[in-house]
Image (cartoon, rainbow, N blue to C red; front, side, top):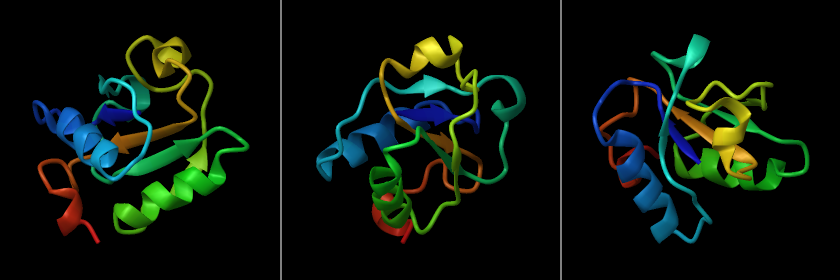
Length: 104
């Protein structure tokens, strides 16, 4: 799941589509909330057991840092908003509007 933490309209949706095109299982994009609502630097959160997927996403995005999933998740609707996703990309200002191919 990708959350827009940059405020750039459509950025999370575009990245979601690009990750899906690479074969990642994705769910609908969302917006960041709370302390992660406006991030300068993108990051990834992961639920224990999904570290390998998080590492793959991180590599595809140029080596983003990975952290344990917070409770609640810092997205609209909190943890319920994950819709079962175990990897959450928080798309910050540094990568919003950047094509996935240009992140590596």
